Image (cartoon, rainbow, N blue to C red; front, side, top):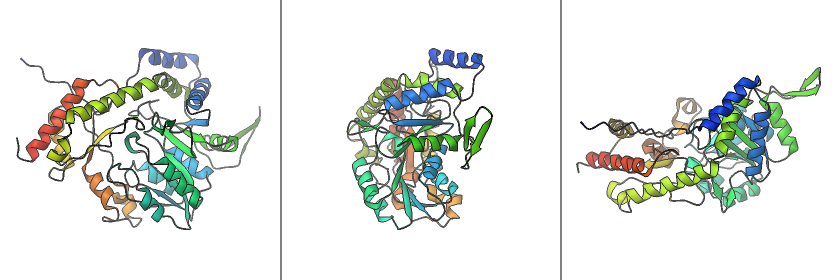
Length: 381
């Protein structure tokens, strides 16, 4: 009797025994909150990013909010971002009291359209939050030329882009603020967590204040609070996981690029024309291939596609619904039709399985299932 194939998830972390042992050592040490492991993790991240100053946090969401606060963004200001991202990207703008402004996306890269971004700038614009969807950066030269021209701060939402680069330089090794996430489905995880790359010692000190209630220690028996901070510190338990993961970052990036190449090979050059679906940009120099995303043809709904893939034991991710059409943002005045490219992509985009422990047979199985479902939807099978 033929055994059913195991479920193939769209994402799955790989935690080695050395990392599990390191976490156990932290738990046994009696020091499990922010301590020496966090410091070691920050040091490794800094070295990887060209010795830039890096501070870790308990999420890649608070990092963006803190960057906005360090940049002085607040009530009366506008911040431009993309409608295709996890909702956190826009939520943090509202958290500071500023107004989110969206610019539509490029239909090919699915990142923010820089022409539309520049057109959205007003005298109230204070900052830009570009998002590097699935690990693919925007045109960094053009992005920073726009920021310089209009005297804007840039908070790079590089949550998915650790290991990505631009023209041979690692994302995070240059630019303004850069925010990374170490959430469970990221290429490098600390279970939950994130880090913020800042520009100077003053910003680093301010980041430290914001991540722990605004507190500055003034001696053994004294402290001062001069900014409104929160509880955003990373623990040594999370940092131990991050350190273990980070030791493999180059191998992880190369493995994911190899899997992406195999996806393209198996789909074949005729797939898009025959199916009406759209593959991602085949970038193997800059992208870290955090996700391999497909935009479905109009003839099948995403819900139906996901259901049929699940029947074939293939997990599919949904990244992302257009932010401006979520209820909170509709109540702010956003409505359907404002960003048509983002709305089409957001309605049809899916993420195929992509994780380090996958092999070529997994890719072939996923592609075979995609082709079968799309063929059935067109009446060809």
